[in-house]
Image 1 (cartoon, helix red, strand yellow):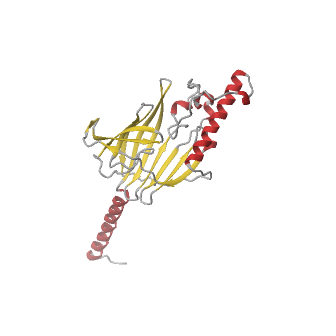
Image 2 (cartoon, rainbow, N blue to C red):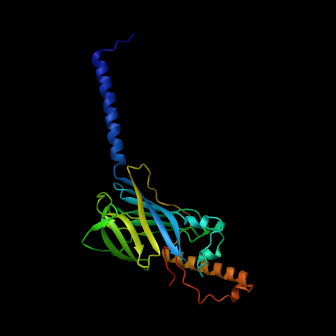
Length: 271
């Protein structure tokens, strides 16, 4: 029978303790600098608020982030319809509306971004990969209190809209990353709205040390941003013409859309 000496037992326990300590240190390093930040995103239209969920995942060490944006939750409810003339929502049945999440991926170290977008229906889903584009921010010097945060105001024009953004330096690890296209600010974004208050972003919760791995979106259909937006605008015109043709019993080719409102989404405005 093997005899265990006090010296052997001490060494064995010491080794186990060392392994445990190393695992704790590894886990702390691996998890340090990972954040999951939740936002409520609203769109005001026809005196109603459409509401979506946004989640920003940010890894400080890898210098990568991805923002996932859900479909507007109101639109997938039964019999929910917007009556605004010319709006795509008016000319689609609820079960046709895509319920997938959009993705906005940023690799700050390599100065790249990848967007996975769709225009209302899932068949329009497109992958857009290009160089990271920072908005030209104007940041006010003085801070003030907003809810529990000490915030600064920043403004920028992004995709033909003027945006007002509030960010805080109370979370010093969070730099550059933000929801949607709000990147390049020296702090955590807590609120954002365009100057007409059609779109708003508001932070709801922060989770630290999250294990979620940040992965770049993949998809078979690719395009540049202009190709994607041009295709979306053309598709919207076809949907509107078809709907009007059915409502008024006239041929689609005779439908005149020249006076219809310009098509707009969070990601672009028809010019």
